[in-house]
Image (cartoon, rainbow over all chains, first blue to last red):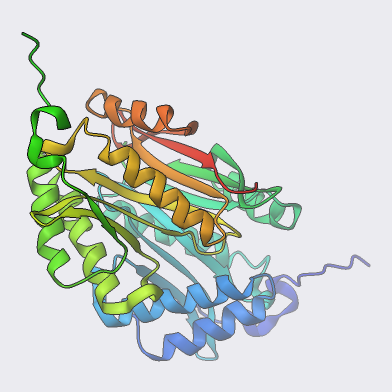
Length: 178
Length: 178
């Protein structure tokens, strides 16, 4: 028997129901995102706080906030989401600020679908490049593999960016016509 | 006779008066910053808009906005300013978002003094590294020289970041005890 730490969708039949995707943000998403990043178990206090702040900022300022969202959910609740936005003062570069899926959805393909749909939204909005940043620490090896597997190229590493010996990697992917 | 496009402080005696420095932000700074970036003549529309937005954001949210300011002024008005802040989710990294001096103050040493004082504020607040980003276009050669001369090292270049053939350079300087 093969033990998998993160059960795939096959072992969690309640995950096989239709996942709905939604760009609209409601006040309920503040708590839903807070719960999701809390339960993911990998984020620091400041990261969790920031994730929730971005939802609030979007609710307060609307599209003007610069934060776009894509939520993946079932009737049972939020399963994952992506937060992204156009980078001010660039022609067509976008930042992917967050992509998070619930612990139970890891390995289910939901993250890939969220990423693919996010790139579609960016491309439809005129975006040509997507940037994403992550840590070079070993705890983030899975994230780095995820981006590499999905067409992102590590373009730069900023040493000791997050903290001493915690470097930042900047990944980029060209999308659309460019 | 030597013609200088940007008169130094020697040729502008009204600039030799004492420059005062101030971190406090007031509602008058919205227009003052708008006028300064407009008159600088080097910023795009979106850059000018963003510069003013950061002042407004600071006024609305206070220190929580994450935007710190240092203004250099005389009784006659604002001569230049720096906008900077701690980078969320980092131990002690700071971004220097803007450093702008009026056209008349170019070559006067005001930019160097603003930078030095900004680094002092960051260091006193526990900051260990300062990041600054600028374009690799030839119009920004002066900016890149300014940072290099003041101890900043170009750590990475992101190709076509701002637009096709308009790369972003990321400079960094270690300050304080690190």
